Image (cartoon, rainbow, N blue to C red; front, side):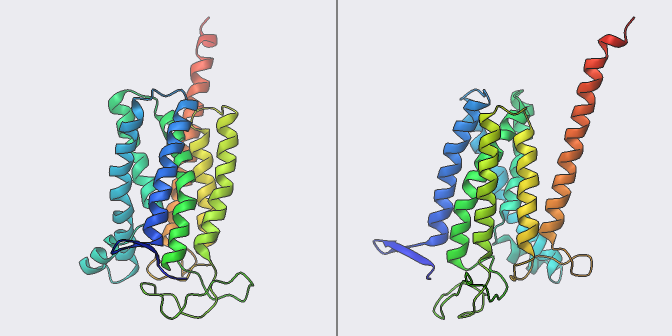
Length: 265
């Protein structure tokens, strides 16, 4: 397994870059399809893509920097080192914030927009994770399982142990989120209520991420509660709790609205 997938002229193309771009293209196609199924104006798509690129692009590096900072010596150098990294969790969190602000600015339907974006994220993420596997980042702990993945001695750019069978954790993420994609596809086709796709996506992604984190071995992911949980597990669990609370609040308000006319005598 080598990080360089092929060359274009004199320019090497890494597996990470290739599958990252392929995932972005897949997500773009998915958001167009999902937005049409949610009845969104096609003119919103460029705005949604722009907000996602800005928010998610900044968030992937910012969250990586913050996790590095909290994991190591909490110095500015650690934060700067972390900024060079990327994390899909940061993309999801900050892209959602950007889309909510966009919906408020354009007076659009925020839950419908977030549903489409969640489906797009579940489309692109499994593809991008293949690039992580090829690059040697997000690597797993040693394993004796028959599907253990080995990096050759000449594989540059990875801190994973060479020649030792490791859990292919990026592949676990790809398969887990891929299964989630099928669930979201079913919900969209069944015209689930607005917001259901977003909530299901967060619950499903958190379940996959929290589980896979237990098999990862790469450093600087944070350590909380005496080493029981990583920073990313905490972030995912907090995100699910926040979304469940928000949707419970929305449900309560709708019930009060429906009950209000009957309370008048």
